[in-house]
Length: 150
Image (cartoon, rainbow, N blue to C red; front, side, top):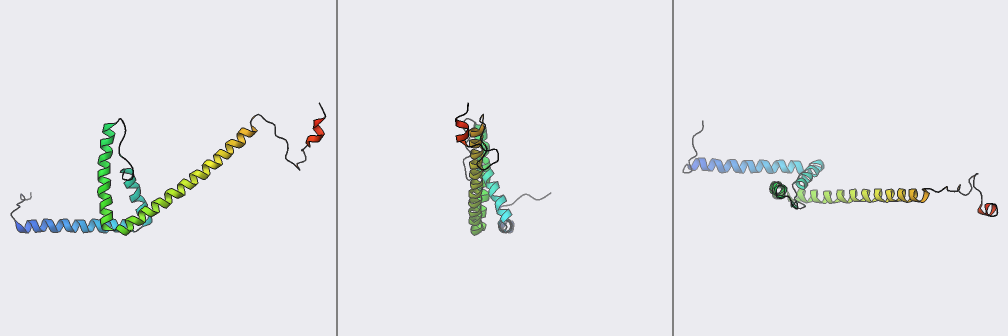
């Protein structure tokens, strides 16, 4: 068993401060290594998103979920502040990359929506109709030849 902590022991106090400073340095080094890699930055950003850092933790009509999310937000904010303190340039790089990725995904979704809309328009135009063969196709019958026949 360890002895009880004695606040009057100056060497114990100095050791505790030194240990805390060492752990903080190690944590910052770990964050720097993590954020030095593109995948590490992407992962860190996703974790912060899950902690509702870039959104709101409020869940209308559900106090327990709101309180739970506020706890997640608190942890996320602590992580974010550690990253900003340890390596602000890498944190800003992470934000810029996340914005570019969100723009890329939004563009893909918009293109997909246009394609889906175009497919729906074609489907609506062709439902229930027999379309004539295209011009130049062997089965194409010009309108003037069929107009007089009943």
